[in-house]
Length: 165
Image 1: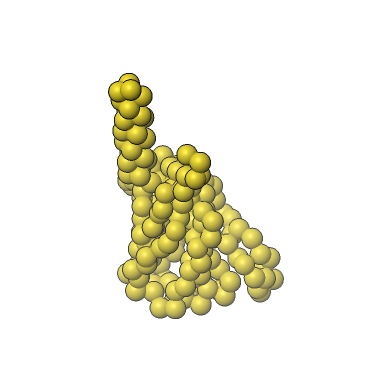
Image 2: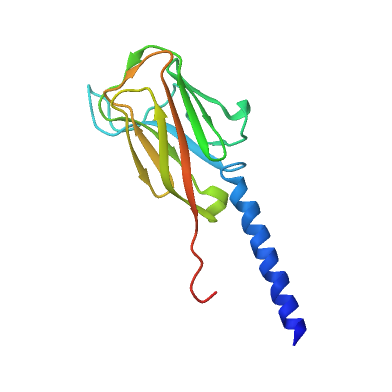
């Protein structure tokens, strides 16, 4: 009778240890995408990804300056395990319908899901949308000025296990 109990204890201990390890990883080592997207047609420009100014390809989150991305002369983006920092480096503004989309946010390859976002910013009129594995920062109508920042913290939840387990 004691052997099944010991086996169950070891399985439970392994599952708890594995889950704790996964919970601490977040986006580290994950390939994510950061893109400037035009969501409405304006001034003769079509909708879709704005290319050729930086942020043109997915990258791996390293939790250091190696994964820091620069978008033109507008801002620097640094994505970490459970947060991101966007620091403006230039002056200007954004047309309505321009978003910065962070996507492929699959925390631990699906072991966790994005459930919320906390933003600390000094950018006026910033709004955002959270979807299934992505975040859109609505930059349209905001001004771009050196010294402005957007710091975000991802809230994640464990993917619920099926009731049969």
